[in-house]
Length: 253
Length: 253
Image (cartoon, rainbow over all chains, first blue to last red; front, side, top):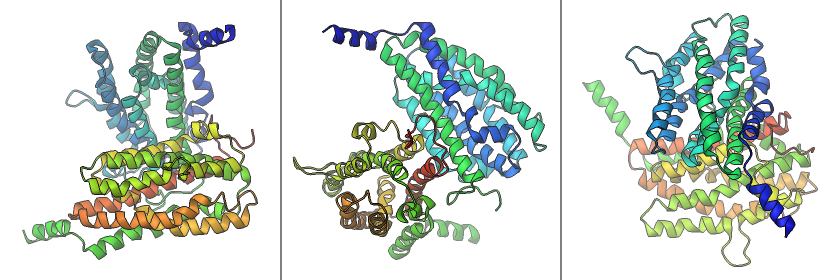
């Protein structure tokens, strides 16, 4: 009986806010995609232009999905203040004012400079199927999971600034086809990501009020790391090992 | 004007039944996963027991999704006769009578004999994220696409018997941990798949009555090949190249 009570107690007791935050943050050093060999090659200047193009072409699918993911999130809450906060993520990606370029447009400047045709990039026809599967799994996750868990899946942004800083430096130093203008997306994310992450972290810490929800939020951060990691795995096999799946972009043709 | 009319004409004219069927069948020799290096290794006896276990563990996710996919398909039609035909696919996988073992149970006999814990396999915790993303993309596809296109995505079964025949022979000849009982799943599929495929092919040929739907059906077969190919790509990177993602099954630990 005592043992049973203790067991229940262990399951049910929520972590303190500090403990919970520490668990969320601990996922990064174990699973964030800055640990992936493809990223190390990208930042270290070990990829050729075709390989960087394959990365940018595939990563476009991820960029393209983010506003859909955020709209799905907003569609699920009755809280107007939450929507008013969250909506700026969509503006950031899509742009709002007539001549304002959002993150997706800035991404297309990168794919332009890599010699990729815009229509081809935007059609996503040449993207790896594994990229599309991973990205859409993320959108579905935000549609289907409890709202606070859906919010937690965005918390990989806690780990993003360091990767972006490293990427800007590494890509500018190593690739002559990349210049300051092209890196605009990442520069902007240096300031946006922490602001988004701070809000989402506070939201998650407040509304994951049971141990079960807290654990699900930690799992959400792992899930999101899986989404990012799987994209680099697919790039690595196709464009480092050379096993390009049928129908996917081939830099050499 | 003439050119415009001709262009419309080209777009709108449906293929003949024979031409349509030929286009559907032509996808296999170009994209079916029997062309993948991992399959060649599997059938050729080039994998060790841990690699075969990784394959079986991951492929379990696919088996597990099939009845959900078929239930999703059935949920979308008002045609009772169609449901009465389609439902036997669910019986085939889940079993129906009290002691009847369906395809999923037979798959677990395979994972048993490979030394994998059933609870672990069924939890899918050790599966590659890319596997789960691909498999769930298939389920979503059947939920979201026009019904005839959803049906067309099952037509990879047209190409399955030859792969199953090759697999049975190759695995029995090459792996001493595989016996006749274990191969029961594939033996059963030798007779089931053609029956399912014949019905689905007839259905698709009848109800894809515009060129647009016919083209979408051909794309559906390609999509399904992508789903299968992406699973083998992920297995190859993790268990042939040795780049196992964080948290995934590791045969050596």
